[in-house]
Length: 258
Image 1 (cartoon, rainbow, N blue to C red):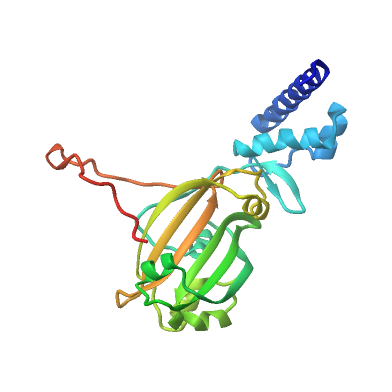
Image 2: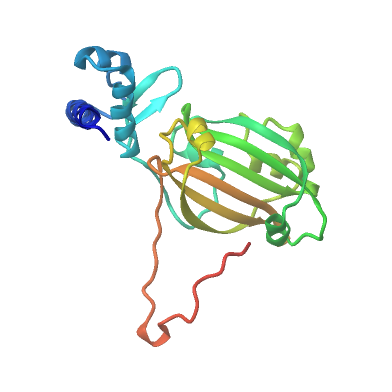
């Protein structure tokens, strides 16, 4: 790198820091849900390019301090939603209990041939047809998660239901299938460029990915779901009893059910 280029990069870095410090003061004095200045306003105030202003805002988004809403602007972020352990609630049920309006953007809903992971999770024979539903899940219009639901073929009638505004589990109950028991696990990974775009997140933002296998009232596996939450907007609470010394240590780590 040439000396002139190095000085230019250092100057831009200092401008980021200056803008971020100014925005942090606004966030500190403000309340969740209040708008912060737009990128155009920031660029004009600091006499920088809009790209420089955008980068400063993205840095704060990565920290979970601000959140972008489509067509509305950037706002001081609410505290992440906490989900309690022990009770199986659908996304729609969970959001309604919080006083939020759940909605979805349907990406696709169709029959497909089950993948090896789906066959294993749902105890299906090879090959098998399944129902695959992909949705962007929102709460009060804010993108919260990307969801892929795989259902056994006997659930095909749910494709006739309103999958954007309605609850999938309500649709299952309507056709006589009762989601009863769920097992699952959590992993973390970085969002792909496409996922980040759909969730209105900076590129390579962290995701909290929950995988579930759900059984019906007869103990049959009916649903295999992967839900990728924006990690700065959703938190899963857990409570564990400490194991007595007489039964520790464990010989093996838990094994994924699929």
